[in-house]
Picture 1: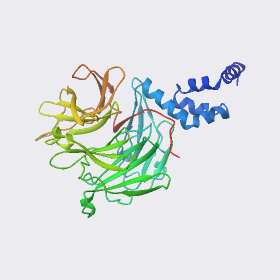
Picture 2 (picture 1 turned 90 degrees about the vertical axis):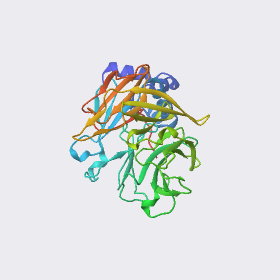
Picture 3 (picture 1 turned 180 degrees about the vertical axis):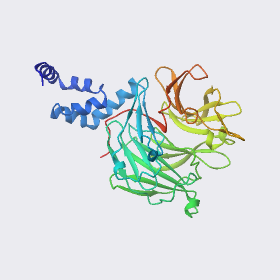
Picture 4 (picture 1 turned 120 degrees about the horizontal axis):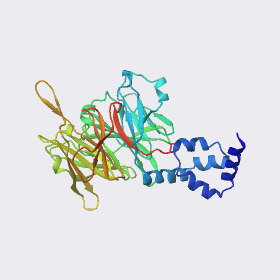
Amino acid sequence: MSRERCLRKESVLQLPHEVVEQILEKLAVKSLLRFKAVSKQWRSTIESQFFQGRHLTHRQRSGDPDVLMVSERPYTGTDTLRTMVLGSSSVKIPTPWEETSDKTLSYCVSHNSCDGLLCLFYPNKSFVFNPATRWYRALPRCKSHQPLYPILSTFGFGKDIFTSTYKPVWLFNSFELGLKNATTCEVFDFTTNAWRYVTPAAPYRVLALVNPVFVDGSLYWLTDCKETKVVSFDLHTEAFQVISKAHFLNSSDPYKVFMCNLDNRLCVSEMKWPKPVISIWSFSSSNKTWDKTYSINLDVFVVWFPNYPVSYVVMPLAFLKKKKKLFYDPVVDQELFLTRVSETKRDEVAFSGESTGVPVCYFPSLISIL
C-alpha cells in the first residue's frame, strides 16, 4: 500500500465512528463488501442488522430500483440471472447452485423482491438469494409437492413486518391434489428449515396465472370464481381474509391481468382490446375501494399468427423518481421501456435485446437470512 493510501485510510479511521457510519450507508453494496476488511469495527458495523436496514432505507429513498432479469430456461445457454441498472449496462450474476442442479429444469421467480431478496423456484428445490451479495439459501421440497401445472400452485415471498421474519409461501388449488378444501397453504420456517401447513387456507381457488404480490406485510391473490375477489394472507397472523371484490376484472382474461406493488400500494393492471390500452387500478386500504390510477395507450401490441391475433399484458414494474413509469413488454422485442406520468405512449427504451427473461425490480442490499 502506498504512503498516500495509508494516510487516507488513517484519516478516515480517525473520524468519529458515527460519522463513518453515515458515510458508509451511502455506498454501494460492492464497495461495502470490500470495506469489511478495513477493520474489525467496520466489519462489525457492516454486518449488523441495524446498519443493513439503514443502508437499504437510504437506497430506497435516494434512487430507483435495479432490474433483475431471470431466464426461465437457462439450459438454452442464456444467462440465468442478469442485473440491469437504469442508464447503465447489465451485469451477469453468478449462480453457484447451478453446479449441482438439474439444468434441464425451467426456473420460475417470485414477481416481487423483499429487502433486496428474491426467490427462484421449480419442482425439486427453491432458493432465496441476494443478487447484490451473491448470498443464497436452498429450501427443501414442500410437503404438497406435485408436478407444477399453472392451474395448481402459486409461490409468494414476503416478510412479517412486526418480527422481521421472512416467509416463502406455497398456495395450492386443492382439487388437483384430491382434497375437498379450496386451497392448501404451506409456509417455510427458516428456524426449523421445514415447511408447515397453515389452516384454514384461502377460502376460494386462486388464479395461478396471476402471480401473488407482497405489499406491507401481506401477500395477495386474485380468486378464480365468477365474481373475482382479492384474498390477503397476513404474514404475521398467518390468516387469510377476503379484503375486496374486483368487479372490474370479472370478464377479464387472466393472461391480460398483472398484479404488482407500485409505490407500496397493491395495484392491478389490465390490458383492454381492441385498442391496446393498459388500465392500472390502485387499491385503497383505508376505504377498501379500487381507483383507476392510469390509462395508457400502447401503440400496437399484437403478435399476428396465420389465422388469429394473440394478445398479452404489458407489465408495469415501478414508478421511478423522475416522474416516469417502467414497463416490460414480454413479446415485442422483449423491451423494458419508460413512459412519462403525464403521457400515454412510449417515451424511451431502457433495455432491449439482451433483456430476455422475467424482470423483477429490487433495491440492492446487504441483507441475508441466518
